[in-house]
Each structure stands twice: as structure tokens, then as C-alpha cells.
Image (tube, rainbow, N blue to C red; front, side, top):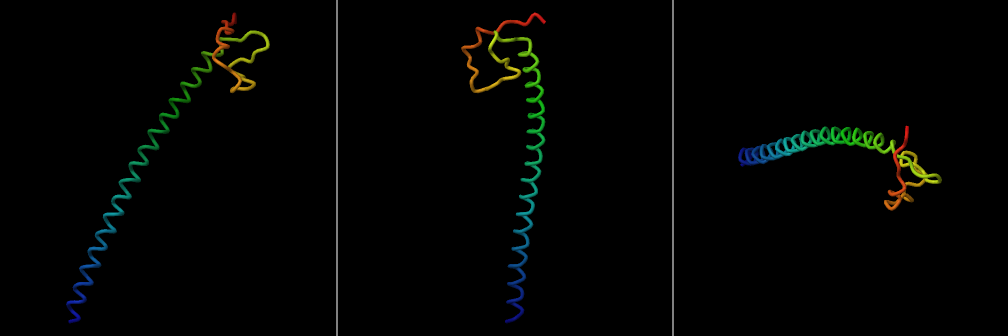
Length: 93
């Protein structure tokens, strides 16, 4: 009968709407989590930037022997090796 079919279709539609509502709720939760992660990453990046600036200032007090480039202004960062560490000496000013 037509009333039974309408009732069944209505129930199916109601179930579908509930599923869509649940999916939207889950997406909203994921979006909020992503926003929190973005804030954490921004804070971490800012902290890392500050640490990098501190490191640059610390390394700036060192200078290399003649013919070498300082770490602050590397000519070729890939060319610098840790075995050059013995060539570092404190700057007098």
C-alpha cells in the first residue's frame, strides 16, 4: 500500500539524514583538531625561529682562518664539513 511505502521511504530518508549529520559532526571535529595542530605547529615554528636566531648570534662570535667563509655567510653550505671545526677561533671583537 502507498502509505507503507511512504513510511518506509521516510524512515530511509531519516536514517540517511542522520548519517549525513554524523559525517558533518565528524568533519567538524577533524577540522577543530587540525586547527589546534596548526596553532601548535605555528608556535613550534616560532620557537624554532628564535632558537635559530640565537644560534646565528652564538656562531657569529667565531670566525674562520683566512680563505674560509664564516658560518654566518657560507659560500657553499654543503661544502662546510665538521673537520673544519679545528680552524675555528674566537673573535677578538
